[in-house]
Image (cartoon, rainbow, N blue to C red; front, side, top):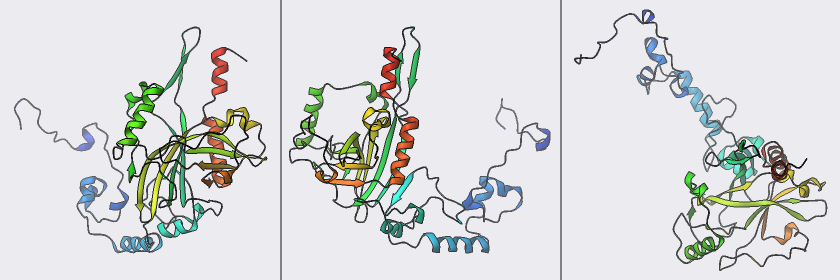
Length: 330
């Protein structure tokens, strides 16, 4: 005992008045044979690592045989019979080949997916950025912008880069949201990086290279918003590159969307030129291009397009509505 400090409480636990805490036993320890009530604690769970009951070993062998026998790897999300898995909040569409390579659920397969091997989609909210406005009475109203987030797996080299590199990591520190560059300073920075690329920090893809577009009833691909490259890894798996794209939300609130009867979404990809600039822009009065006019298009399956639209309607940024509120227009 240390002088000045109270000694240990030697009373029976039920007399201390403190609630008894029982920890949920981790799945990986559920088949460990421990003695007494210690089996419900982390200490007890660790006491018998390596001593598994025969039925648990048989279950693990069965799961491995069903879900861990594919050539490239395995899917860690939930599947029938699994007791331990990683929570999956993404919406997947994948090719049959990708499913076979990674033992993924058969319901992820889409025969409509064209141009890439797999897309994992979700809608994300930037926790570091909050947009606010005040009314005439000084009352503040704030909201966090939501973005459409795509994680794309594709055959190596399918999507061209403006600068060769093996990886790109999008760093978004919280303070950076409050500091904006002038157009001149930003262009100067891009030129400097193009001449002396910094591994990992230099954007390997052009700013305007990716767009979410809607192929309407006229066969034209109408722009719904730009997509910006985030993380990129060359050959994240053998023969497979990875690219994450993010784009602003709210296109379903715009007249351009509401006036179109047919909604077929694609990701349109342009080919960057050698100097890092895009091809000459189309005249403003020219009609939108057709899908085949782009260097590459990723055909989004209808089931994925429906999820994107559903999310955008529910949580997309309503620029028109916000402008009406600021201007007090009904």
